[in-house]
Image (cartoon, rainbow, N blue to C red; front, side, top):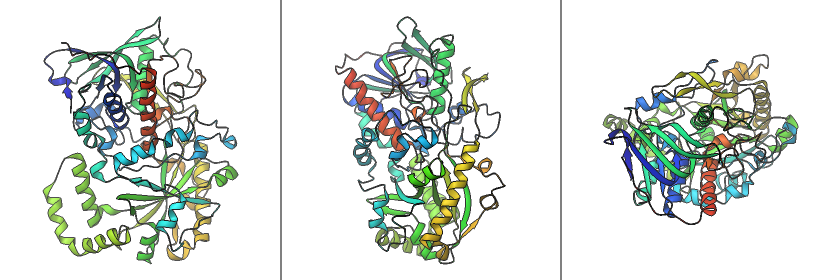
Length: 538
């Protein structure tokens, strides 16, 4: 792989490219690989190293006056591969009704038709080895032939996320061979973008300045730039660019940094496992086409309209960490991180009988067998609606590279409380109709069964931030156009969940990947001819 640690470079350096990509995470690497494989000269700047390093992670610290946002350091990773070094791999398309106009919430639709994103699903599924089967309720005909789950319930509908194996989840590892063969691609590590040069007359970005943690500097000049550094860091870079331009760059934009949103989750009940095998058959992970399938019981579009609520889903969690399955999970995650512990392998020997039975369930029943003593909890995950008051700004405090930290003014809002309450009511009705209250009754938490106790303040963000560089057609009310180019700086594009106008309820990663590939195709269509390769200079 063409990796160049800036900290190891003998002196300050310059580089040139057709396209400079900021961030070597999931979006950045997929985008860079696609462009470079078609002859484009691409330089990628990654703030972290080849693996996770504490000094790089410390750059993710934010000012968080309310203390409400707890995922700044546990959901964002500065390293080659970005969040995929820790990612569980869950992929699910955003629902069609979530990208459509929702008049009952006064939400316009996305300026991108979901069919444009769906066109990239086969390519992504093939890359991650997750198979082409359905994500939607029709999959019940395959995995629930006994008809235990209602097919036409008005409260909840079944959707099934796909999760690649841990071996295929780290994008840097997955793409290593492809990227290593690309002579038109260079990836600089330990290269944190700290400065910009703008042509204020033409309104174009000319170059970016990066710095290593040891003080080495790099300037990259390019025709086009793509920020693919995740929602929070991408927004910080745009705010810093605006500040360095004396707030002229985004003077006509009212929403940069506004509408910060994340998914919220909270435990609402414990699921009785008196019939432990029956509960296992209902809710334990399934396997299909060599990938794990996670059940989401999502509120239907009709229910959301009737309630005037955002999207939500029920999700069953299993406390696997204290079981043999937890040991297996830790081992495969260590493989993903390339950090093995031999004692974990040794401890598996004590659980051979259960693991043999579990293997039978896995390969014959195509389902995980969860030990009898492992508890099942029911969580509700909700879409947080866009709120002007939830905002990213630049802090007056600085990080170790003298960059302003992010100041995040965010908290759950009253609309989120309503979404939780409506979702709980819908789940309760569904549980009764499906007969689950006989097989696996719910023991609701005090806040879930008492509406006088606010539940939203108990919720945790899911490390799925989005919304702060939203896409749209009005330059005052959006940061990027539908093709993800900045209205204010047309040779700068954004490949990030920060462009999502609304969050939907699905994990955003699959949508991010589709948008990144779509952006690569837009960039190649706009500039079909590749230009000769440039070289690094000291």
